[in-house]
Length: 275
Image (cartoon, rainbow, N blue to C red):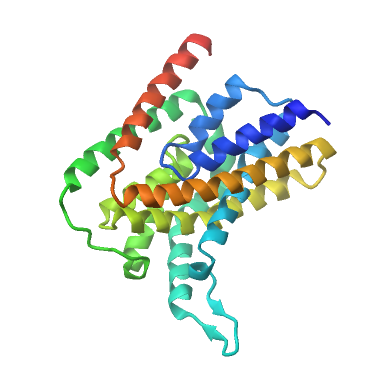
């Protein structure tokens, strides 16, 4: 068992936990980190690791928002919460576009767009959009201030923004859905929360699909690396989600837009010189 590889898994878990929820692209950061710190694993396991480590991140959402995600109130008088069921149906509707494209074209998308040029372009373009849209919306009241107010059309619209992220790595799933939510009238907090909830079926499905394709033929070191990465991503995600919700109550997303632009330029420079 290599301690060095386990420490690398810790580092990747930290980066995953931070970048999965902030609208700055976990893919872009993982690609950069992989170039700087290579893990000594097979290509097949690395592809699995990048996706399955996200299961630790979504577990943080389930733990933090359990009372708003679980529709059954089990007590002396069991209650079925219809509002939560309705929310889940809207989440499923929002997941359909990206789900269909992911199942049918997953390998083709990786082949065509999983490169540093696409990642850098997506980072920069969506960074600019965050700044422009926040400036346009400055001072305007939000039309939708809670998840219960999100209609079916709005949910599907957010799902289409998620589809953009599913096709173009570097877009950031959270970035695309938050941006789409703001454009469709959601408050920043509501857009962020809906993005968190939307991640649960999307990332769980992607992780399970990878596990099915890979099988369960892990070596002992691979299993430890995966579990360590997931555990670290879970703990870091708890902290980051709480931070983001507190941050956007008083601030907009423009700082993340500038960060994306700078990172996109650095990706182009780094791979242009060392690629």
